[in-house]
Length: 561
Image (cartoon, rainbow, N blue to C red; front, side):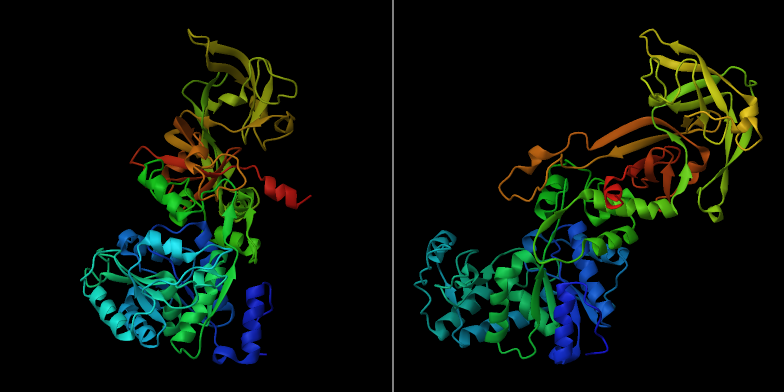
């Protein structure tokens, strides 16, 4: 067994180990990540990135980044730049091996001419509708194109004239000559080149003839010395065409295509086409909207690359498609942020409290830990005074049984401060409660003696009016309403969008330490969840925070049962 062999944890590693044992590909491991630059990468691409770059690292091999830029009508430099940023953010590097399918346009054209010369490709004049009719069905064989018998000389002439722009878009295509009776419809003389007058972001208007992905993919792999070409499961039926192309052109050390199950997540749009539709319809605030499952959206949301890599490791690599509960992804980010997130107090829906027995014009400074289990993360100072804010939901005028928060005549402890008791409530003309008059027990300051240890069942977070900063806080929910799987090509997924996926709270009160927050810093707002600053929309003196994930962890609890 090769010294590069690792212990198999999935079927792809088992295949690679067998190749190394047999000395295939000169005992090399060389993978690639081949995104199409027609949109931003999403969490599903993260699985592929981690797999391809991860395998290369495990086997001391290499992994290329190659852009599949064969369809210029949908591709933009913006997407190329974003993809590079996302791969680097996840913690991977292509070490200078960044390529484009367009790098190989001249070679791909030469290979197509060679297929024609070998009698394995022909120029076809059938319309798209006629081609569909000739293709046959899953139970009936197709019919050969009337243009299939053109001579090599005629095909070479027509193909050159296609390249030179003599014919209209869509009027002719180049097809591989394989088998119209094949039970695999993909092999029924597939199109490998089409005429398309579209400006390419790299080659400009040099070409009006572009290769199809199924043709460009295997040749690009072979030219780069790829050994294991790892694709998602929808390309399984395309593997015979991948192999046919390389064999027909006489490549010797041919890469091997291996398919694995793509990632589907509940309540999550996992189609780049659908994500693009959301952006173009202005139903989200761009590709990096924190509700989007794009890597740029997750990054802005506050997810860490460590949490996403952990998630990809946990879900593993399988041969059959399945759907992962989104709670598992949330569990991974909670575990990560629980370790690294500073604690802070934030009141999202403030209700004012006046401590009537606290001296007016005075305040005191309390010291709070930044993390209850990590003293090395230090402490911070917060002010405590006569006027405070608590959450509206932490008070009930007519409390139900076992309501251990604040109510008339009831006591609670304010986190790291004093026990207070509600004595009176103030209402406005509409009957809404706008203020609570309370008293505090001066002998119950946290950590200051026997009286301080007096037990009450409720502990509330709070912010002092003298210390509060005003902020906007955004609470995000799933883009899709509760549903097992959105992956239906014919379904109207727009009708499943969650109308409450974004809630904006404009008058929140946050403790003063959050005034210096940066987008890279994550916090646990006590009893609220994990939050971070949204640097894209925050303005000086007007910070905007959003919730990364709530504190509730249903998936983690299920695993610990």
